[in-house]
Image (cartoon, rainbow, N blue to C red; front, side, top):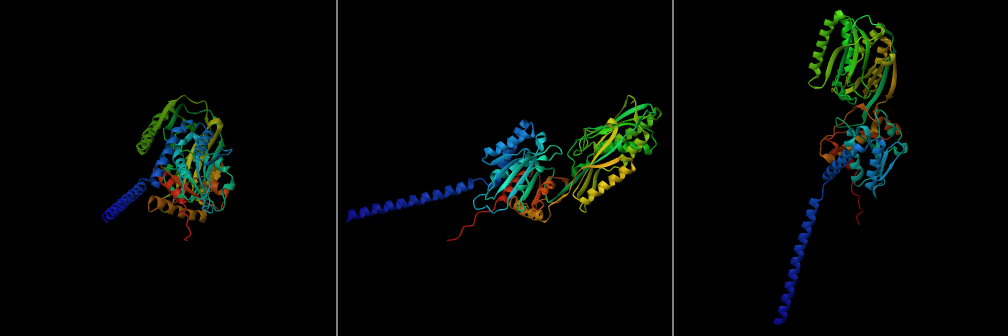
Length: 484
């Protein structure tokens, strides 16, 4: 009996030991699982890490982007290295096609597009990195496409030649652009570029003292709603000679040149005028006053700016008086900068006198206008046509793009994306509203007028937010399972 009891005691003790070990092991496993859950990176951490890595790769590689084709090859290889179905078309559009995950085949197709320009990659890196992040890190997604489209100055050949078959009625399109201000919009600006021109006549100068007047070292930047506060050297010199004329300082105009591109604000302008030597003191007083006022207004914001005048050799010919008077009247009447604001003080139309030339015996003035109101664009064109007629110069619209208005489909997408933005960022509101600048959304709408298109302006501070919001938008959530 004692032996049996002893055996029972040993068995019971062994069972107790096993139970204790099981409990300890179970607790350890639970703790291990919980610790693993705690150490698993969040979506925010993943996006921050990936996006900054992609930005660094792009920045470190940009010196090798000697052409758009070279940049396209980089993006193509990036996609292939990430096991993404990537291809490049004849226009250097790089297209990543991400197939729908199982169970999400019926989700509406999504297209994410951003541009690139090998000659100016610094202004594309953030938007490109956001697109790369969305291309690789989406969850629970349907079919979507990420497109990198080349551009060069005004040439939007890449987007123009995208196949319309990529864009169906139910496609949801996001155009990403690096911008000075972060904003999402379903209404972006149209653009018109005008050329004012005239064949010039010349004559021998009547006066005997020549001066070159120059304004320079003004930062040139892409023409945008922020350009209204930048001094325009062409307009400033135009106002100067208008002042000469109105205050009876007699002069002859030999040349007037400045600016480079309709898409850029002019960084410099210069003119050569001839005056009577007896008026030199009066001229110098006027110049000193003009320069003093100009510096007082602008030098704090633009410390490198220069406004100078110097005596130069006499030109052999000057522009005929009648033609000079026309130029003076035109430059005085021409408007530059902010053209219109809405009731809340937001800019809705802006104008840029971008270039002037009197070379090769012909006056050429290029003017560009931007507006999210088609009515304003038409009004600006009508005004310049009238001004040109009164000043005896020819008026011609060289290029024009209509306002992009996404309508109801884009408005619904905006609301849907705002929900994803709030869910990811926790921000109570996403900055929305019209965009004055021309964007390729106009060209995308031409592919299919029924689909929804949104413009997303991205800054260095919001690139992570947009990448995360796009991934959240693409996430259709876990699949529902039928209860047994």
